[in-house]
Image (cartoon, rainbow over all chains, first blue to last red; front, side):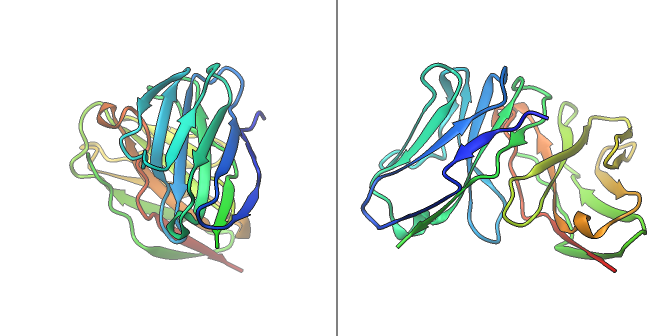
Amino acid sequence: EAEVAQSPRYKITEKSQAVAFWCDPISGHATLYWYRQILGQGPELLVQFQDESVVDDSQLPKDRFSAERLKGVDSTLKIQPAELGDSAMYLCASSLTRTGSPLHFGNGTRLTVT
Amino acid sequence: DAKTTQPTSMDCAEGRAANLPCNHSTISGNEYVYWYRQIHSQGPQYIIHGLKNNETNEMASLIITEDRKSSTLILPHATLRDTAVYYCILQNSNSGYALNFGKGTSLLVTP
């Protein structure tokens, strides 16, 4: 079964440094999501793409976070500068369409900011 | 957005059916009920979804009440590997069809 690929699996960085995460969705999936999950809580949506366009980034802290999906396939989420409170699991998901299609998640990138 | 209410935790003996309830009393007519689970240190895994009718697949069954105000996820023969956090989520157009996770139910399957 096809999977959503994410890298790196783990990342440790110092505060004020820049960090980037990469996601390769399932082939043919037009919709891509980035979620953040703090330990003990459910995932929270950061940004949603339809092909290369941002559909919803209302929960993305735009002063330090950015996301792109230039060719409508893979995507990168960047944080600059990282803060201690950014320590979390960053999850990528994709779906075939926006409506009525299940989201398929990758196994995430565990970020630790020291 | 419509919300769901789930018990914080549940236990189930291995080999028995696990019945996980979810209340969604403010659900609207075009909202789907989705169930996901998350095993420690992995991404959420899709289980099943439905609109009005009961649904069954190789993993589980989803029973939705006639008024659609609640649903139950049934794992017919729970195994130790079913120990996970289970999320009941409503998908609607107000959120751009993205899924808004709550805290879910932590299911512990015991030997």
